[in-house]
Structure formats: structure tokens, C-alpha cells
Length: 382
Image 1 (cartoon, rainbow, N blue to C red):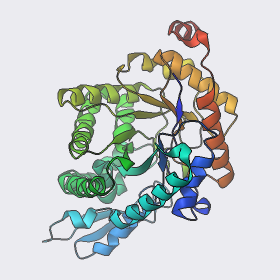
Image 2: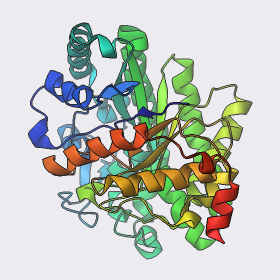
Image 3: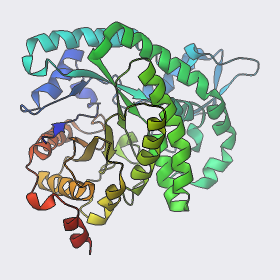
């Protein structure tokens, strides 16, 4: 099975000169390797611009804790003004016109480049849980997600949970309109660092299984709703990448496997097909580990998942290839795709170029015959 290259999304601000040139940047760097989708992200810093723009609705939302998003300790929190009711229009991402413009540029690009005739336009779509959590609970976020800080700001987390249906309605309404306008042209990359980080933190506290089930229920519900409106999706997990730094460093892929297995069980019960899932292995500025034990939990991953190995980094390509070999040894099969751990928006232009080249080189590498079974991993792990 041949792997495809998956570009997660964003690019450095200096590269984002126009919609067409942004998408060309990815297409030109594929070097003939299959791209199933081409991204055109609107914000190199994921949702920072969205969070800052909530001040436009200061008749309903007010700043409860100031912050300029300089780092994870400088996250802003909002609250709802007394007597006001939060509506979907107050939390919508308001991207319809912009995505219409991007889609028009994408159609022109496909006409000019026959090699991407079957490629879809990839739109980043934060999980509504993440939007709600960062709007209302940003004050609880800091390096390492310490419990003490989360408990001190628990009063901001509760509003996020209560407001989740409003965020979900806003997101699904926008997605539904985009599907109606652009049909199969689009694929939505559903991004949920909150789900991933919750399970990583829970693993350290010995509560991985129940927390995985809890966050999987919300994520599965959203994926099921997206499927119902006809949206195609890709699932992107993340350890956080603000200022190119992770919020939590994974010790292994066990949290990812626990989350995806719980998610698979719920989606099957709802007769929802499993979307391709991007599993990050590198994180922040750190390349993917070269320790076989990091990847061992993949032996337990539900076999129906089409996985994208997030092993590529702007470092020595040979190390990314070694990490991919370890990933596939544990998985027991060839990964469907290869990607970096996150978007490239927080990288330098030079690092973005290197990461893209490494992604292609790693995806194109032949899988050694000796890696076709899990026995090799078990031997190397001792």
C-alpha cells in the first residue's frame, strides 16, 4: 500500500500571500506524491484571531481575565454579561464568504493542475468543545495543565460546558451551508487538542480510561452530526502548538490509542464511518521519538482506523523515516499517510520548507520487509 502525504494546515505568515499561492505552496511540494487534500488555513495561529474577535460582541461577552495570547499563561477568558443570552451568531467563526473565495481559487487551481484534479480542499474545523473551552476557560490553560490552576478557574470551565450546545449549533450551521455550496469539494479537518490533552493528563493521574470515554462521547457526537449533514472529515489530534510549544509532552501513544478506540466503539454503534485519523508523534519543536516503547500501544489500536503518522519534522529526514518504521512496526501495517505533528504556521519559513520536504521523503520511503510484523518491535523493545 502506498502512503499519501498529508499537510496538516497552516503556513508561516510570510508565505500566506494569497489563497492561490498558499495552496500552490503545498501542491508544488508534493513532488508527484498523492495529496488527498490541500489546506488553506485562515489563521497561522489556529484560533487566536477568532478568540480575539469575540470582543466584537461586547454587548453579550465581556473579558473576565485579560490576555494577549503571548504564551500559554497569557490566555484570555470571556464571560457572558448578566441578563444576556449567548446565541450561535456570537460564537460562529463567520467564515462563509472567505471559504467561498478560497473554494473559487481552488477550482481554478485544479483546472490549471491536472495532478490535483481529485484532490479536495481541506478546511480546518476546531471541535466545538475546543472553541468553548478556549473562549470561556482560557484562564485555566497554562504549561502542563496543572490541576491547581484548573480548579482555581473552575468557574470559567462550567460556562464552557453549558455553552457547548450553542457552539455546536454555530459550527454545524456553517459546515452545513458550506457542504450545500461546495459538496464533495471540501473535507473538514476536525481538530481537538482538548480531547487529546485531557487523555494525556488523565494518563498521568491514572484515570485514562474513563476520561477517554468521556471526551470520546462528545467528539463522536460531533462527528456523527457532521456525517449526518454530509460533511467529509479527517480527525486531527494535537498536543497544542501555540508559539510552537506543546502544552503537554506525551510519554507514549497510549492516550491516543485509548481515545481512538473509545471513539471507534461509539461511532460504530451510531453507524458512522471512521474518518482518517492523524496521530501526532512529534510535538512542539520536538521531533518524533526514536524509542520503540513510545509506539508500542499502537498494537492495541482498532484495525479499522486509517491512520496518518505524524512523524515528520524539520530535522534529519532519516530520523523521521526511523520514527515511521517504529510507528508501522507497532501498528502492524503500513500507515495510510504521513504528516508533521501540527500545522506549520508557527514555524520559520525555512523550517516549513524542511518539514514539507521531510513529509514527502518519509511518505515515499519503502517499508522494510522486516517491519511487516510486530515481532520485530517486540524484539527491539526487549
